Amino acid sequence: MKGLRFFQSIQAKLIIIYVLLIVIAMQLIGVYFTRTLESYFKTEFINSHNTQAQLLAQYVEPYLSVNNEETKSGEARKTNADLNDVVNNLFAISNAEIQVIDANGIVLSTSMASHQAVVNQKNIQTEVTRALQGIKDNQRMFTDFDGVRKMIIAKPVGTGVKVNGAVYIIASMEEMYKPMNLINRFLITGTLMALALTAILGVMLSATITNPIKAITKQATAVAEGRFNAEVPVLGRDEIGQLGQTFNFMMGRLKEALSLNEEEKEKLASILTNMNDGLIAADDDGKVIVINRRAKQILQVNEDTTLGKQLHEVLGISRDVLRQFEFGEDPTLLLQIEHDEEERLSVKLSFTGLSNTEKGRSGTIAMLQDVTDQEKLEDSRREFVANVSHELRTPLTTIKSYVEALEDGAINDPQLAGKFISVTRNETERMIRLVTDLLQLSRLDSKQATLSKEYTNVFEMLEEVADRFSFQLEQRGIKIVIEVAPFLEEIKIDRDRIDQVLDNLVSNAIKYTSEQGHIRIGARLPDPDMLEIAVQDNGIGIPKKDLSRIFERFYRVDKARSRNMGGTGLGLSIAREIVRLHGGNVWLDSEFGQGTKVTFTLPYPGDEEAAL
Image 1 (cartoon, helix red, strand yellow):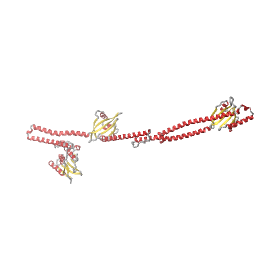
Image 2 (image 1 turned 120 degrees about the horizontal axis):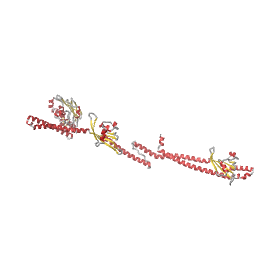
Image 3 (image 1 turned 180 degrees about the horizontal axis):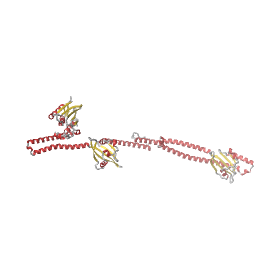
Image 4 (image 1 turned 90 degrees about the vertical axis):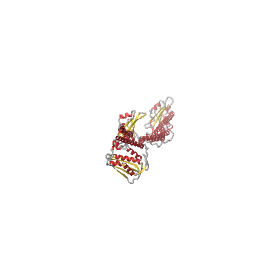
């Protein structure tokens, strides 16, 4: 696999290109050089043997003249012997056979001792026939049956028109091809050496190109994996070096951009996570792609099961309603979400479209604002106004009716007039108490109320409270018990305001406790730094459904009875604010039909002033 990858690399391609170029160049040079050299050697070989054949033809011409035929037979044999000496000694050619042929084609002499049998035999070679006909250029190259390349040359002997014979030469060309073969071996060796050197140089040269590219590729992979620490080494000022510099510059800019993008992403994620409003983003198909923590809390959903769902399913509304508010003129909707019987949320939904330059509208953002507290506050405000109006209207109506009765003549009846005036005075005092309580609550809410603290004995303070209500307790036969933990030191409090708290709690206990009941006032230290005071009765108690609202202003469990007893519905609210102003807390435990226990705490011994 690695070998296959190597041949697919740029380095291998460059080496192959260099090698192929050298092979082609060497082949072209070798072929041209071999062809030229072979042509030269052949020309020289042919010219040399043609010259020798021409000289031999001129030299043996006298031996083949007609006069020789008229000589005596003894002289003729002598001439043939002389001709053999001439052919074998004077014109002998290495690796060649020379034959002298008369005008009839009979071989008169041969230079090859092993071919003496052809003497006096007729030579029927085509070249010989052509030479005997007076044709001068008779030559042919061929390969013998034993694989030896040879050349035949035949020259006519004689001057003028008459041909007296021919000279026939068969020469081997192997001696000529030996240097050619040697040169070819030199060329092949040189080509192989050039190829090896080219491959080595190609590896070295291609490495100068591919190594920087490999370094850039490696760094690009590292950048893709998020590692920006290393840089591409720049080894020169050529194009590769410029590419490395540009890549390093690009990597630096990319690192800055990604860092900035990551920073912005973290900021956005932090904002989305910690924002007080819920946010849900959906794509152009209506599928949820982002939901923040507040939205999950409001809707009580899980992110894993929410992502990918349709937005209208997550919000619990129909698709038509979603489209109506999503594309309508008023993209807000008040949604009521009930998680259980006790928890009901009022959520304000606001829809905003996401825009894309290419696709236009690419999604929707739904903002979920929990307005439950605001709705409760608005309801409380309306209820407060209604309660104040009702509490003031009732005594005013009574006063008006009695005053009108007095104007109509009841003033002349002393007994009836005194009764009407007494009722009018009681109603007026009731309005004064109501206004006083409202002013006190207003000062407590605006933090304008100040505490005038002094060291107070707890047991004495509780005994004085019991003494203030002793007449009412005796009238109804209710027993009161005071229990104070031993070794309790004095506590630094605003005595008047704490007396107001205790009076309110004891007064309520007396109101809602039947005759012959009992009330317990206790003080203890559940914590070294906190004093706990509790007022407990065995009266009618409070239903469970009313416990969570018992400290609300103007809230009454039994409205008719409380109003008839002169209560304003603000006592517990004022008590809670006074305790909080001291730095404590107040709570109520009750069981309907069994009694009520109201407990509040104060810092002990209260040296440092606490603010609400």
